Image (tube, rainbow, N blue to C red; front, side, top):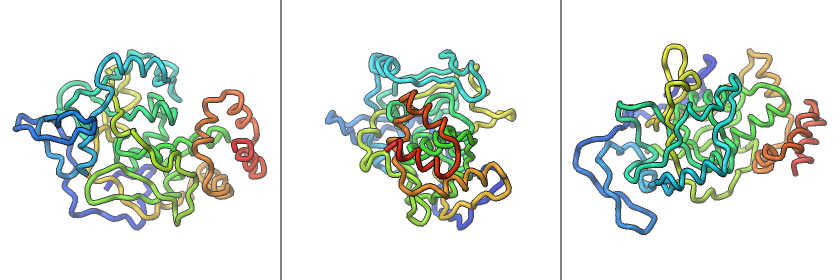
Length: 315
């Protein structure tokens, strides 16, 4: 079961006892096997690794971003690196290498134990959801609490996380992982696949970003962390702030406990409890790219009457 931040323990947690132990998957010198290639080309042979704990649908997809040309075009179009919440220096491109995938790599594969640490990202996280590097503490805290790698989270759940964070930013309140997760339960299958969060008792905070999120599975890149950027992703003890690679045991929970001890979190919950359900996730994230509009939202204040006005304004 995954680590829970802030010392909280989720209630009604289900431990999938039939799951294999968590492992970091690396390359093997064993004979190769064939996987389905949806591009229409012949099946691609990839080195044999133990992926028995992963849903076969995940292994089917290789990335269309598999050349330097395709990667350069993408980086020229979208904002990937952005100053983090703690340091302006995180904008430095020398901190990260954004690399195309090798033709034999799959998004659920991990580090072989050599070379610098890395994690994978779907390009829609950058282009559609405006995720940027390095992650903020809230985002890393949610990944750590769920015990999942970034690409293990379905884009619609990433979108809800982004919308929650942006609304907190507009209200000038600092989001926490437990204040976000207490509105959700997790949906897990027997095998590791893309994790989705379901609204608590069916009362979703946000509408899905996309009813059917298409073509994200074959569009991913590798983010290599250079030594100068380790402070953004590792704690003082040298532990990563979130799982870099897919895990076989994401945190399975029906109800996440509502935080009650922190005044800051109580304020967050009071704000979101008063809002209507199924808010326009796509519109909220889209407002992030419109400087004047987002500035107007930020200046509205934090009362419930004004917060309702936010959504009238966004709609």
